[in-house]
Amino acid sequence: MPHRISIRPAAASDVDNIHDLLQPMAKAHVILPRSRDDIFEHLQEFLVATYDRTLAGVAALHVYGTNLGEIRSLVVAPELQGHRLGSMLVDACERWAKGLGLARLFALTYVPAFFVKKGYHVVSKESLPHKIWTVCIHCAKFSQCDEVAVEKRLSDAPIQPMKMIPILEALERD
Ligand SMILES: CC(C)(COP(=O)(O)OP(=O)(O)OC[C@H]1O[C@@H](n2cnc3c(N)ncnc32)[C@H](O)[C@@H]1OP(=O)(O)O)[C@@H](O)C(=O)NCCC(=O)NCCS
Image (cartoon, rainbow, N blue to C red):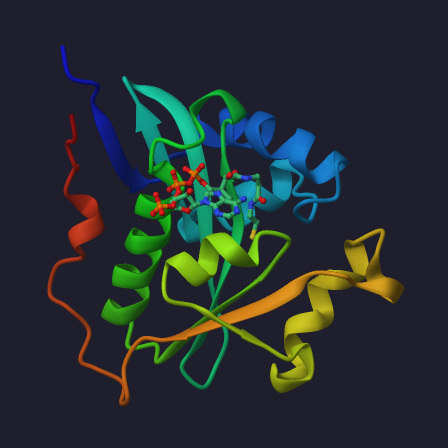
């Protein structure tokens, strides 16, 4: 029987599972820590991937001004990595960002090779606006950030918001 994979906006009932998925990666300093309260406050930024109805991946899209967005908190459960869930979450964030009229997406990451496969380019951290660093004060490595900045241009000009966001449609794969 084929596995059912779906990408959908996060719901309040997902918060504990999102927190449990992010926590070990935050402890390993792979992503910034997110408390349950922080996840609740930013719940509308989160997408989740489910694998046979189990929460298996998460990503957040944070919008800055001037057509710029950031993919944050991208994590796939270790036992389900390599099944393209990470790729599908990034695709969904991009579709969402395009629908919002954002021209560029960036991420700060230890896995630039994954993002390069998704069409991102490595850029200098100094090329990103100063305001993106405000959340980084919560990072243990703030003074010696060794993450790599990657960026993708989604469009040459902002586009009109879509009438319906396609990420709301469940995706099915074998
Ligand atoms: C990075 C991560 C999200 C990738 O998710 P995934 O579902 O395992 O990746 P996918 O199966 O979608 O892989 C898509 C492609 O990227 C490649 N890829 C995946 N992880 C990679 C990595 N760490 N380095 C290089 N390439 C990678 C895959 O081989 C695949 O390549 P292909 O298209 O040639 O077959 C996942 O490994 C993860 O959660 N890592 C720990 C947390 C983390 O580092 N998050 C990023 C924070 S910005």
